[in-house]
Length: 237
Length: 277
Image 1: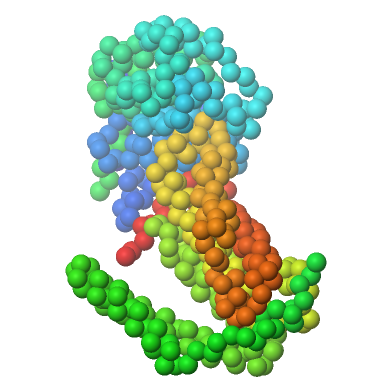
Image 2 (image 1 turned 180 degrees about the horizontal axis):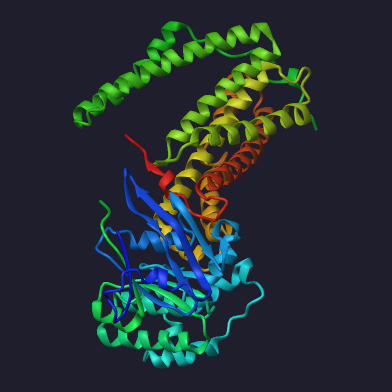
């Protein structure tokens, strides 16, 4: 079962059909995924407008992470298709696709070395060979998150769970992806840091029209703050 | 300078032929191991006995087969034996890693065949300059030594690569999410697996003659060959072994990489399973 509605108007479960007035950055057609012998979810017809802020909810095991992984092209669906910018995901070159549809995993990983080295790491990839690291972008973000400038020099092995999440978020955000897929990005943060991170993301999103996110959150108050629309995945019978 | 094939192995002819009784006498040395196992309650007597029995039967059989093949000198027969040896080496190489994936045996077989046959073939025709090139007295033992070492390198490297992929899955996928290609996301894992596969060959090369006296050289000396000549053989063998191990390890890692990443730059960890003991 999949429900969809706009925040503040919870009685409109068919909201997905009412959104067809403008361009969609992401669309899924009859998307389905099986695990062993059951469908985790199926017939998922999602249309995401550019600039949307969607919260993805659902009980444990409802396949939220799986959906994000499929949208990011890390796994394939068992049925249906994903379209990004009206182009079938299968027709995209995946490294290029993932520079625009960026998944921030729940357990972000780092190479050995400092935070700064890890922020620079993606510039070694061929897909980003024409981009250049700009340390000045991080300064206001670190200020907003009340992190010292020494943060960049910290060894990643010494970071706490919350610091890892923030470091990974900034690493991804520097590339300004069109669609952010956030898998519980604040799960290891205390409430005050979590709110600061939300503010930072809000600011980032407002800067350029069309920036979009799908945000998995278990915290209902956070879900209200960061989502204009809610997509809820339920157990499939 | 090419070695003269007819001037070595049995040239001196001054070696001691062992009788069946002497071999039986030799087996008595195993009593020390059995007694120690009993005294220390290692409970290894049974497996030691079975292993010793297997060794005796296998060697007797291989002796018979080799006698037969040597007497025929037929290229297809020799090639068949070489392929059988490579297939057994591939089975051994693919069974050693703690994790496996569908097609691991074929990947090992392809890499072993390609590397060992190429290197042994080049050595037989280019260095040893044998006429005919398939002279089994040279081909079979040389290939055997190359296979043994290649399979070691291959299995060590595969074990490391598969283990690292599982353990560093998050890092590999984080890189993919940041726009890396499958190659970029995993090349450091491939590199360290290659190092793991090759380090034993390099180490053994470094201590050869100082810490260890290689088996083939010892064998030749026992067979009456003058040590200076045996050493020259040994050097060529070590070069062959190292070349084949490097080539085989690179090939098997590339094949494993192709099996565990899709063309869409996805890590296919669901293909990986733990070995059933």
